[in-house]
Length: 600
Image 1 (cartoon, rainbow, N blue to C red):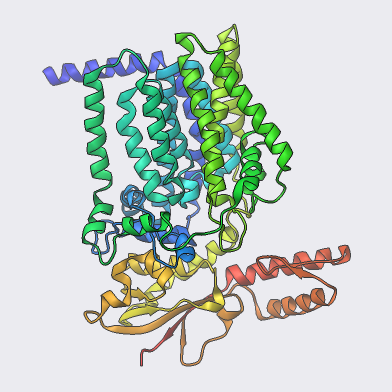
Image 2 (image 1 turned 180 degrees about the vertical axis):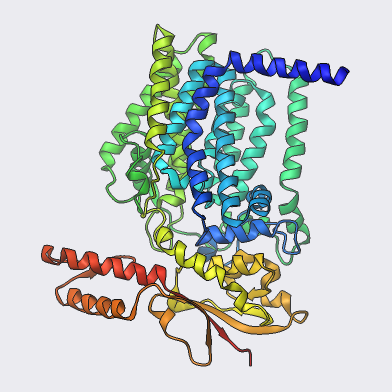
């Protein structure tokens, strides 16, 4: 009887709460609607992870198996240092493991990342409401909706670390702001989200602990201080940290050779040599382009492949950053009352974020191709969003009639969400993903043909560098329990130590060698090998047409871009170049073969 009464009371309280906050609930649902629609669309269309996403899928499936991951993916910094270093921890894999195993590979990843992004947006908006009321709640949802629109619908469920952590980092910044405002009970959440960021991508390894320290220092000045709440918060934060970092610490202590944390420390202190950095000039220009100069690298600039393209001049960048800094300083000076304390603390953090962004960009190691790609610094966009949040929050408080601010901000949320409902995929951000997905799905359906050949020895095909098919093939093998090992030092580090040949010997039976070829290589069987899987992207006649057009374009002076595609020199060759591009992409992203070579 008592339980029935308590259930009735709970339902009554829920109805009362929904009635009290029905406006906020409605606006929040509108803000996350693009994520919901994009995720459902991906699930219904048979979303198939390719490229690095498939490796993240593979390791997520490995959770709580004999190949359980203790670290994150191998970092691209390994190429610069000459030593294998991995991202510090596997928290992203742990989060994705349940949805992947329950809902399947592609749907599970899409649902997992979609749910993570929704949780970060709703949680941050609720925290903003608790700190500053409805105005901050609506400002945050407006800023988050603009950021989501800038990303495009297809990145809202993308598991690749530079994209899947964008809203997590924005949530982290809001929680850090809460700490700076004296909300010490936010500390365990800061530690949890911060651990996810640091473990998943090395680009956050300096940002997160520095911001945490600054927030605690600013928040310490908040009065009155509740000593019991502080102790409770630190105890919970310590427990969260211990749980989050147990696996990396286990690998550090019991793993083979120097632990990953030791290798990361050695790399940071220069023991493996120092890498060239981009310097102050580019740091100023890039940060100004994202933080201060409209349209703040949103659409279509979010999709630009290289941030160094179309950058403002050094003088323009410096002037815009000075204006931004003065504006933030004015918010500090004009927010003296206790009611505006959150605005002042947000402005303090924003000024510090500009400074730490400049330092981080200045210290960014030069990539192997010598150019700064946006995925290396996607953390700039959440910082820009938080700065915009700070400015708009202070501006909304200056509006005398709160109904005007409410109406304007709600309209922004609705408008940005509506613009982001149609499917939007930036080819510059994810080249070949859409075109290679059908061929990848067809290849995966034929994977059972590879069973019964012992422990497959996967060989990276140097002629097919950068092809999108090897990773989903390995993920499909792992899902179906077909054993394989990878000798390549880079790819081998991505699929787990237990899938290296050295670990396999002598317990596993050496099987056939396995290799993948796409494009022209898919149509040529290597000597001594057999083609076990074949997906034909173009017909023989279309290949002949492609060869003829390519020859004609080269004869007329066409040049190749960084992807090897021909760019017509003369306008009269424009249609011919378009036909060439269509056939070439169909060949490269639609044709794939998997070859088996018997072991000697």
